Length: 327
Image 1 (cartoon, rainbow, N blue to C red):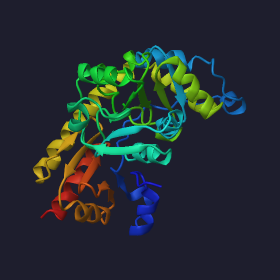
Image 2: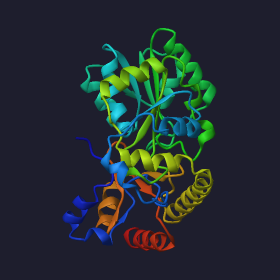
Image 3: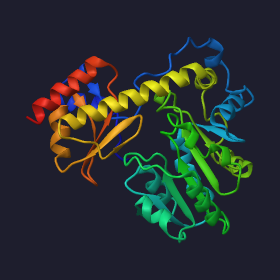
Image 4: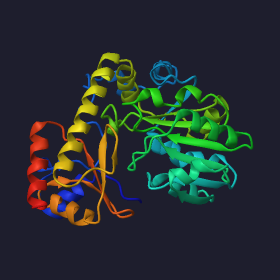
């Protein structure tokens, strides 16, 4: 199993600090999540039904002609490689490592490359996997460039897979509206923007034939009834969407300024996190953890990702800790 953020209980055991005393900045999850309503008993008592309206609400939210709800975008990341014969796959690096592992596990030839290398030349790969905006590198891509890359791949039966888990704060840059064409697959997650990571829900936007094949591979009832109930409401809450985007961008700018004041100017970032490449990353990670602040440590390249503090008290705590560590 690969390492991920959010391992708060493990950190609590290692450092002898109770979980409730931690400031967890190790994930890119929105700390101002969508307010959960009561869940009716029927959502727990009945099997989920595909025709409950969730697909229609999600198509409207994402601007997608067709999509498939899945048990988090992770389910699609693991299943998609099984739907192709052995292929040459180029995957953005650094990036979410589960992509490369899933394609390698399925027997494909995987090459991890910087985004510039994947976009600069005529593709020598059958499949290219990008993360937009990238996690943790923050790269963003021009829509026209992505569509040209897709056209070059699709012309010879290839795929362009775009993981848009962090796209919700900048929805005008999404490729979901183009995903009905063969060979373009867009992954979306509700965990980051809506702060509903525990629901384990994502969506795959793609051509209907591929969605049918993926649905067959994953089987029925991949998304629970309670999660479907909640997501129908959350995806339709346009007022909250607008307010959340503004709040995320403001908090991210505040975090960027705080880190810069302490001599840690972010290398890149999104509305959900800031990423700092620094040779001292491991030292900083452990020093902050000793003070009950959990960050996401990357070894290659040496770097730290900081998620958003939830309020001014949390910003103050991070500020004080960095002042002590970097004194």
